[in-house]
Image 1 (tube, rainbow, N blue to C red):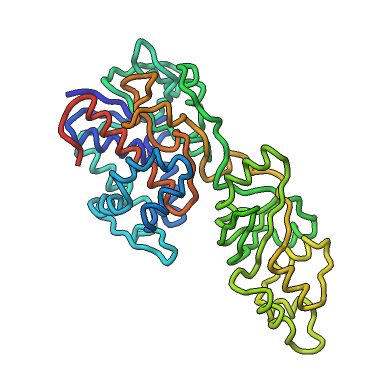
Image 2: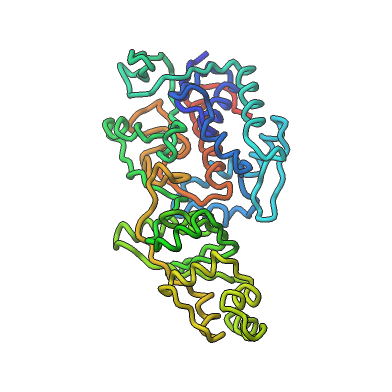
Length: 405
């Protein structure tokens, strides 16, 4: 029986451990946090969006250029297989109106408990409060919480250390320096699915911080993202802005602040809005006309005023045009530690088709530490599960043993 060390106890690491242990190998999962699956549990607070139901080609396109490289892993363990995996653990899933897939329990803890129990039955050992710091004499080297160091003997290693978003949950990106020192090429970790900064006026910030903007479309050059957004003290966050986070982040890095256009009523045309705003009772205030005629709540009206320096046009045609094109200047991405996920990581050219590092034979990698990014909506977790399974199967193929099931 071969010994395998899996470093990182998120979805990618646990999936790799499941595959390898199912093939009859001894597996130890190591994590530097006191408990496992912390970021997975945090994702469950929003309902645990496991995956998405859209078709294969559109699904893979969500990963941009990396979709071609991820395709074999996702094809081998697609959304349908992930749903079946959850079902085997006693957690049925359903497809929401947006096409997103959730467990019926709408949280992560039952799934994680059932999964850990399964891993226990497979004989997987878990060790916590051990931070991976490199290799010594070919063995993975760890630092304990008391500062002492320990190596663990093994026949293969899976690294599933995540990116660097929400580092307090365990993924802090510290592995980048270690692997770079081994000659592995790594794209810098950058925030994605993140909020962006807007220089709000004090009046707008004090009145609307924490208020949502429902059903809007954000346009950036030839791109558009539809969804909701939340007004923060220093900008915007939420699905409508997350969908543009990669292009916005890269444009700001190259050019400095950039402009976006917000459509507050994407379901109505300018002509329809003009007609709606032309009615109303004589003497209605401008805010009442916008609220009754266009269905705009105070935060949306406030955003229009913010974009025009406080003065709104009174003519229906001009108001309608403004509703469809509220201009905002985006100055910066929010810090990486506040992002939902991170872009960058190990270049995909650095790994074999079964996710082994070319420069470190016997060391496999999976999950968010690879150089890919995707929007929220289940695409992040799906790629973590799929690459974790692929890396696990790569280990099994290298060590010998029956195919995982």
